[in-house]
Structure formats: C-alpha cells, structure tokens
Length: 327
Ligand code: SF4
Image (cartoon, rainbow, N blue to C red; front, side, top):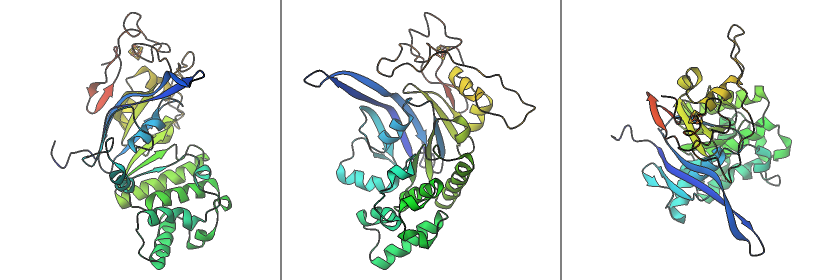
C-alpha cells in the first residue's frame, strides 16, 4: 500500500469482553462478548456508518478505537501509530486527533459549567490558547462554526434546545482540531428535522476541515446520506460492509436485508416487503455458535450455520459479507 492509500485508521480483530462478577468473592463468572473480532479500515476524509440494534457492540467498538475503554484483544492503528499499546503521554496526544460526540448532549455537558468553559476545557488541557484573549476568540470562532453565536458562551447547557446542545458538543470536539470524530448515536435523541440539520452541519464541517467520521446509529436510514461506506454489526461482529450505495441497493446479508426492509422509502411507487425477524437478539454472554445470526435467520441451514462461523468474504468491489450462503 502506498502513502496515498494508507488508511487513517486500521482496526484489526478488535475484541471487548466485559467480565461478569458474582459470588461472595466477586470472582469473574462469565463475560459479555460485546465486540467479538471486528476489523475495518477508514481512509482520511471518509465516513463509515456503523449500524446495528442496541447491544450489538457498535458503541463499544467506537470507544475501544479511542481507548476510552480498554480492548480485550486486537489492534487499532491511527495515522501509523498503535493506539492499543500507546502510553499515557502518547494517548493524550492522540486525544487531540480523535474525538467523540455523544448521544445525549445534556448528560455529557456539565450543567454547572458555562458553554465557554465546556468548549474551552480541551483548549486549556492541551495548552492551545496562549492567553485569555486567544481563548475567547477561539470559543467565539468555534460557536460560530457550529451555527451558534458569541453571546451563547456565557450561558449554561439547560438554556439550550437538544439540537443546540448537540452543536455545543460538536464545538467541544472541534476545539482541538481533530482528524477523526466518533459520532456515537449523535443524532439519535433528536427530532427528525433537527437530525437533518445536525447531519448537514457535520457534512459541512467534514468538507471544511477534512474530517473523518465513524458515524454510529441503530437506524440504517440515519446513516444513509452521511456515509461513504456502511458496516452492519450483529452480536459483536460485522456481518456486512460495503459502499453505502451498494449496501442500500444490493444488500447481501439476510440481517441487512431485514434492517433495510424496515426503512421507509419516500417513493410510493416502490414497495419493499417487510422482513420480520423471529425472536430477540440472543444474549451476548453466550452468543449462539457458528453464525451468531442463525437463531433468527430466515434461510439458516442446519448443520452448517449453527456449527461453522462464516468469515467476512469479499463479494464485490469493497463489498464484504459474512454468510455461508451468500457470495
Ligand atoms: Fe443466515 Fe447461515 Fe448466512 Fe448466518 S451464515 S446469515 S445463518 S444463511
């Protein structure tokens, strides 16, 4: 791979197994297999949508990439640097390049701090403002960049709407001029019209600053317009990854087909048959053997799908799917 095509982010075999403790001695009695061998790459300036039902491991994947939680196994490389083995100092430097925007902006913004203090915290930590004037100027610049005004900097989070609070969260992430932002269900809690405004803002910012996004959502329709590629996760594994257009027009995995069948199509002339999956997502404590999806898959084959784990195999240009029966 030459320098031009070297990905900004490489994730290989990422696993996160949370221990479950029990008994008087609080011994580890089991594990939640939240992320179970996830691999993907991301080019600079690209947006990868990471989609799946709640509990599929998408948020844990995002947090492991940033080392906000420690992965159990696997390797994350950012800009040629190994994130998984980085020490404290290197991690602090990496935190400037890799930021996160959370789902609930209200819970993630300290209610006792002014907007200026919230956004400026990272400026202080990373010594990015040499004096008070430079600090103030940068706060105003950041607020205007996300569509808020200079006056807003003296106010508190409760004085803002959900959409405005998410803009404050975005300004906070932008303060350190990151290269990669993990948007963890960043628009999921917002009304549909506000969702569109925030997604448009994120797209504008990407064009302006050359940002790279991992855009996490539980709904395929939310990530459709912002994503260059989409990865679908089920019970800790990526089951399909493809360019967004390919995934939406030619899904190959039965789980992706089922998710897509629930997405409304604006054109009334096109009808899609709704695929209703049987049962619930099995527990990630003891995921089913073989293909994790076999307990709900409408085309599962006994003796194959419940025994052998399907590898992620290439079925088209940049299109990979993890299914024994789809090629
Ligand atoms: Fe369904 Fe089998 Fe494919 Fe899994 S491997 S998605 S169970 S057909």
